[in-house]
Image 1 (cartoon, rainbow, N blue to C red):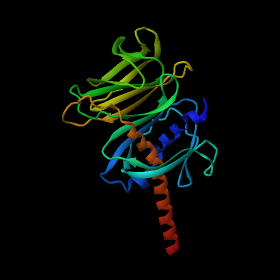
Image 2: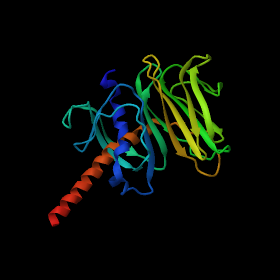
Image 3: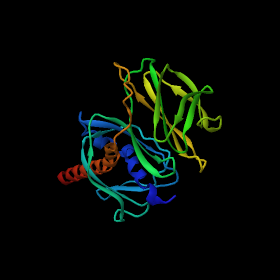
Image 4: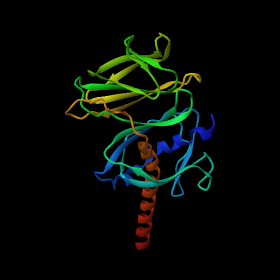
Amino acid sequence: MKLSRIVLSGSLALAAVTGSAALAHADDHTSMVSILHGVPGATVDVYANGSALLTNFTPGTLTAPQELPEGTYDLKVVAAGAGADGAAVIEANDVAVPAGANITVVAHLKADGTPTLTPFVNDTAASEEGARLTVRHVAAAPAVDVRAGGSVVVPGLENPDEAKLDLAAGTVAADVVAAGTDTVVLGPADLEIAAGMNTIVYAWGSLDDENLALATQTVKLTTGMPSTGAEGPADTSFLNLAAASLLLAGVATTVVAAQRARVRGNA
């Protein structure tokens, strides 16, 4: 697969390495952002403010949520090995990060195998059953049925849609089959559904390339009113969240370096 088709996935990974220096300056005007690299077969290098922030980032990584201050940022992504002065494969200026969102940004393949980005708003509303299972189809594959204990619980799920089930905490034996058939394409797998959590499962990869895989994350539910069902794939403006994390990390690194230089100069 050509790098030019998937390089943007590398920019998504940097939320994992923004670091404590950036978080120390965060205030209440923040968003929580997790990143899933679900495009098989590529690595990228990411630079911000001329410094290498991430090299040889590989698919299959789901980052822990990072608290990012709202604001506007710039970024530069280059082909792996191109160096800081390499031609920008993608470059963005004045990228906006909003406040008050819980989002997972997924770099993945469309059903036809074309790389794309889909930001999902994670449902953190209370569950009447005590827990929630969310299934997201982000793989290069046709529609699928999701089964639990051999019974279809989510029929005809298409890329890049999601389905949510409120249920009691426990273990769910799940698998994924081609829609309307018993042909298993992924699983079976035992999913641990924790009380007070939204357990989110991603089916990613490519059916034709035989590299389908599962990624799982958990998001804490709040107390109060149950879900309205309004969550799901977000407006594309949320794509800016992951991109903004790049320059945020670069700014934090520059600030820390400057502070250390001043300390040495005053010693």
